[in-house]
Image: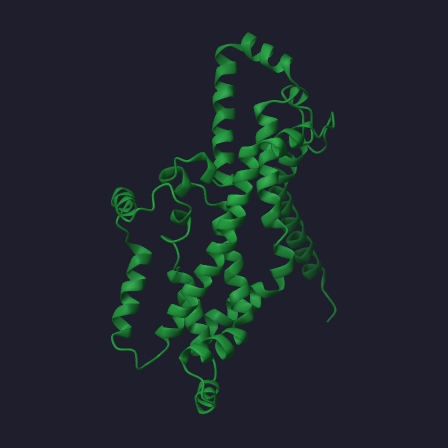
Amino acid sequence: MKLTFGDKMLQFWIYLFLTLLAFVTFYPFWNAGVISLNDGKDTMLGGITFWPREFTLENYKIVLQDERIINGFVISVLRTVLGTLLSIFATSLLAYGMTKRELMGRKYYMIMCVFTMYFSGGLIPTYLLIRELGLMDTFWVMILPGLVSVWNMIIFRTFFAGLPAGLEESAKMDGCGPWKTYFFIVLPLSGPVIATLSLFTAVAHWNEWFIPSIYINNENLLPVQTILRNTLNANIMTEQMSKLDPQAAARMAGASNVTTKSLSMATMMVATLPIIMVYPFLQRFFVKGVLVGSLKE
């Protein structure tokens, strides 16, 4: 169809708006990367926008030589991998069971699950429960309390309910029990949904810092995001101290070309880039997975 002048103007404004939106969204991340690659002492002078003024890798050298960062990175990877695998398995298994009409009390179980989406016991009762379960200062406190996602369960359940009933009937005729049907029939057909929800779960595990900051006191168990948060807090405290005592801040800056801000930006880039690199491999499953899981009945 031939576009009219009005259609062309509309497209122009849409593309302009999307371009500006993309720029506003991406620029903070780009600026953080630029600051992490710039000399820290020079960064304190301001004016660092799109390109490093004095390029250096010293910030990354210090970050990658910090045992806390390396250990936190390992903890984050283990937490993300194990948490995602166990969460997807437990959530999909619950969803598969909820699709069975012969399950006694299925509606009541569903009501109980949905109830937890809107109401919780609160932070203090949850803290007491975690303490009584013996999960304080353990690796599993970052995985087990949030093992099942009700929202993901509903998406899984909707997708499973949309699968042809003849598949399971054929599997039963071939001698497959519920477990074999689940592992060899249902899960292989759920690739897009599993890929999409796995990525959402992995991102949530990788970015989450609040739970470790409450339930973990052992620094060797802290993930990199919690360490980053502590680094950013130290940066804020340093900036406040510099306002109270500018001469002391100048002496500290003169002693080293690395500052707390430059280190925090480098730490943020190290903590963010790994999960961003996962997106290109799973992006093609996004629309298909979520729509299939939410539209089929």
